[in-house]
Image 1: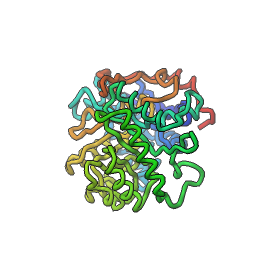
Image 2: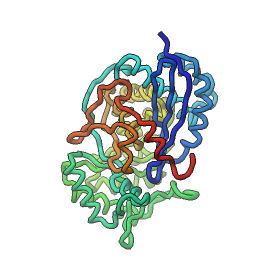
Image 3: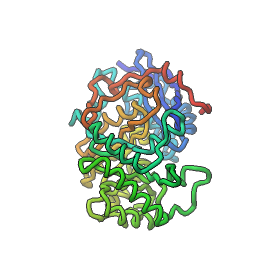
Length: 394
């Protein structure tokens, strides 16, 4: 019995200095499918318009036939399949998978081959950066010193997390400064790190380690703000610190090769790569140790293909998840079905109303307890989303 798609609606919610973005698909059987497609560079504004256009192509089609939906959408986008088109198609397919799983009364992981694990190790992401952003949004006090970073490291340990990921945070004149040159204004043409910046990162890592102790892994994400030879130079210096994971993003696999082979330091990349063909270039060059895959931006079907290809190269996958609780549940369903799952990214700090929008995930002793509820395993509160519109219309 088909379950036909009858409409699509895009919703946005304020998230402090960011905006969360959601797609809602409705059906003639009353089953509603949800997907999150938030990003950090505001292209969700463009994605929303593209989603609205492509959703018209699937109205009237059977939401249970994911292959047919993907074929129709690929036919419409094949000459420009990546970028916003990939993200829009991914959102539509993800929402349809939520419908299909709910219709069958199973979690989405069952549609991906079945659940391999019901508890997933997680790391506290944007540790430090999240609190700085929340201070900028006016919902908490700012972090002002390396001593407070050590205190935050201790909090991570005390709350049961066994890993944290931070970003390049520098301290000058009693205040924290985020090193994000590519994310403001016109960006920066060089992105070549000064030695003083690298030493500031070393101080940051040491401060986190002082508070968290040896039982908590420390990870660093440079969020596209290091390139070229600086990636290798940064890796060589950080290999002398307690850091275990260096995340550097680039569209050139050769730039990552210079960073590999530095002791226990794992090189992680791929969060914004698009489609299995682009990932294959990096796998062929053995350019990364752990693969980041974003199930919102690639869509679940393509994400599973990427993960399966990575398994053929003996590479583990860590889902990219800098979004709201809905994306956490989506990523958890993905990770639960992978033989080569590594660890799940989770944002701990957030705006006070975050838990009102989507059922919060259950996290115990540094692990996410997988929901067995149908679909993504959570409830989305549309009224709560609409009650927190972005300050600037999207």
